Amino acid sequence: MSRRMKIDLSMILQKATKLVDEKGIDQLSLGELAEELGIRPPSLYNHLDGLNELKQKLAIHGLKQLYEHMLQAAVGRSGDDAIHALSKAYIKFVRTHPGLYDATNRFPDSADKELQQAQESVVQLVVQVLQAYNLKEDITVHMVRGLRSILHGFTSIEQMGGFGMPLDVDESFSILINTFIKGIHSVSEA
Image (cartoon, rainbow, N blue to C red; front, side, top):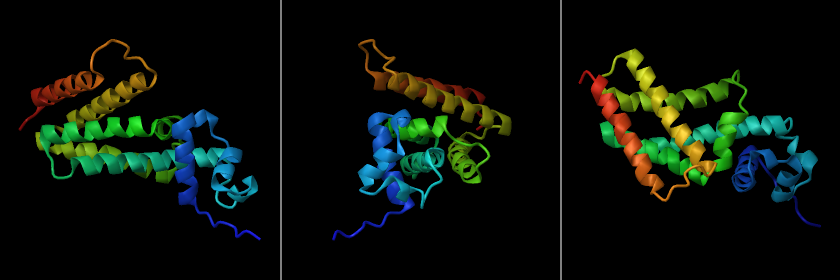
């Protein structure tokens, strides 16, 4: 008689992340996830209420992972160097985890407190990096929104295969971030 494997939410999210990164969030099913975990589908209901809750948990997990990647990149850096580092970490995260990143933007229940905390931690990290520029509070918010728009827009276009011209995409990204940084310096009070 084979021994049953004990699973937990962390294991479920790890396997679900692998699946969505390989096949996309729209292809995620509880049946395939259970098969990957070596369990029967009803066993997942010991940990989740269903597919929607799994997608919500993936959104939170993805934001926490994104935050960790950006934080690790920014540690020990400040100013322009920190912005470059956390921007590159963001791009690398999306390239590595396209399905998980997609989950962070498409399925979250915005009333979920855990989701709000995960989102806020990413925002606060960027705010903290921007403190080096001594910006007014409203300008800081505008800059956070601007950087998010750049990062999300760039990665979204890249994921759709929208950069077809024969130029180095990483160089384009570097020029874009440098231009953003020049904009910060133009409104900085430092």
